[in-house]
Image (cartoon, rainbow, N blue to C red; front, side, top):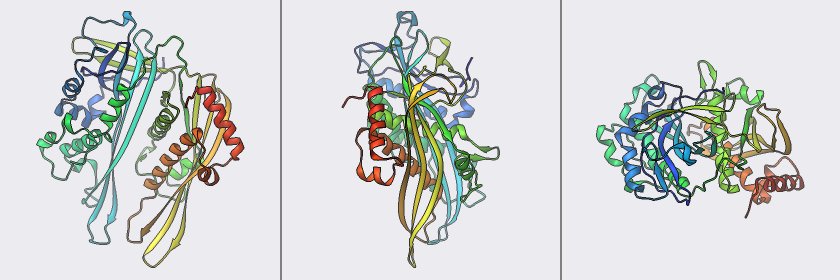
Length: 430
């Protein structure tokens, strides 16, 4: 038995599905340990009720003949249908005090909201994940709380919920002092394409159905962090501890790895035009998920797919260099040292891979800023890591000469050969 992710509560709704094969829409749910849904996702579970997301989705996409409502009583798993669901995978808030604004002496309390979700297509017969499409968004708000008040608990629940709603909607309604009527800002008519909800619905709209038999999943197999990078993240190097992943108990590697894995999977899926199963941290192959339908409840054990080919992502370290200075301004370059590996998956252990390609690279971003600006190095490193993941994915398809020269740590010939091997094995078609 693999590691349990826990109970997944599903709310029924109808959906539009662009597919000739009927698929069961199972609803919205949560990856979480049994009995801990509300404590792990206090804002999303409450927001879901406040905005009546099940009704919103049902009304917006009702009447399509290619989607079947799960638990409706007339369809069972014995009939061989696949099911699709939208799973919430992460809800986090990070509050960090960064001193006073030198311009007006106001307090600067940075609150970062992280929301993760996945569209998951799975087989009802054998409970195998067939496809998964992750999406992770961070959004930072600057509040005027002093150091003592710069905590998650000092913000009202309504404001927290409104800020997560902004991530879902792609909007900017959440302001200080928001009241209980904040829900009136969010409706089906003002969903933005930049919002997570619309983004994930579009993935379902364009999802191509597949079946377990003959399916050979490709995914992000491993995400690893070097000891050197680990020390830097925990404040043992040149930087303070990473504010988003450090706690009293130490570095939360699971969250860091799943964020990096989700970003890697997202860009590979987009650029290679195939489903890349995201990285799941944990032992074994089983995701223990419970489903609750409107008229039935059943335990659903979703199994991580047995990958045919896999990508590994390695985070090796960070470096910051100051590149220029005047009386009022300063320039800095933030570099993230990473690497990817691709090969035939032979088993579950990290070493169980027949490596076909290895590409180390260094991604850098630069910024010129006023000396009075408050700069957070880890925010810049996170952005640089995202840029690097996007660039390595896109350069597998078409090599950019400038990026190859500045970022790739292998020769252009080696890179092209490795890229050709990867594209051939994953069945990439232009």
